[in-house]
Image 1 (cartoon, helix red, strand yellow):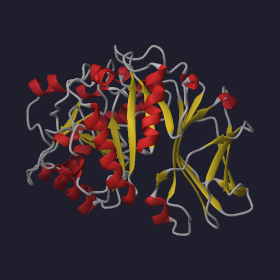
Image 2 (cartoon, rainbow, N blue to C red):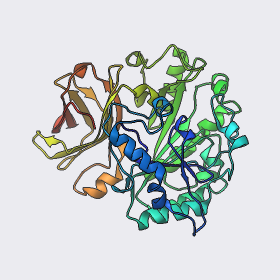
Image 3 (tube, one colour):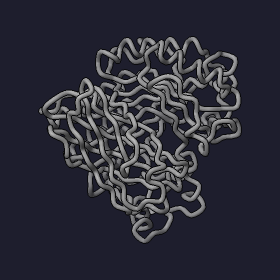
Length: 434
């Protein structure tokens, strides 16, 4: 019995701390305030709601029956893991910097929340300062901070001030921005490093794009992508085009055109996502993910987290054992075996004695499959200065037919440079996910 709630933190624009899912937002875990005399984050982690979650998971029960079972992030078959109170590692803080948004996407709950929710529409800069300071003073490691919520993050009138408060206290924490891109990039973000920017543009043409992104302008979002690339590429930040598959944008013509545009613009990844609402594509689905028409590089097809309920997952695996002739290292942040014969691999692989330009992966002596190592992992180079390449991270979806029904999985990663093998690294996973 498990979910992300004891490894992550979700702070709304009005300071409320909720479960991190559309369904879970019914559960108020506590509130934060910029008032220096108000209770802090540690007191919140100690409150009765968080203790109830710990006790429930330890006993194998859902903390909130009738709600947890419908949560996209709930994993009833995974063992209990994580504890914000004792382990002091936060894998992700999600900040809803703003509830406001100019777009009117049909399935978004933002407009309804604007009418009913009490408190500020924009996250207080002083609250962010207090939160970061309290976490740091109490010895918390924060691995990632994500700007996302029920509104548009860049609608915050002082977004760059929010960035500064975080970077002053946690300069090495990775930042992710999820935006609709209908903004002037330079005015909103400036020259600040955002390690990963995800721009949601659901379509390659205005007429199909606006079917869901109502009031959105395709050209404006595409310009945002280009401006973001200009600023972030030199800093090591990655730019991803996220494309949710709907009935309005799932023609072969449009999907191929999106891949062509993404290649021309030079985004680091075009990320097609299977929808889960009333407008979701019925042509390309989770069940037939392996048949998706991939005609250009740097494309990933993934599903809404709710599709992963029956998946088996492993977290924080490594280091791998180097079985090649030169030194190398491997770490898997996440390994997920999905029900549709695909596998998600997120992590990093690196060499000690030589660089590499190609990486392949094989599972249980199956065929070798290419693995794009195109994610900057400054944290890896900082921890292991002997490693060669900063762009050593991967986030891939590959075929898993070779391991279907297997309890034990052996992975081999082959690193090559100019067709010469630099290292082979082996990692074994036992049948129990973690």
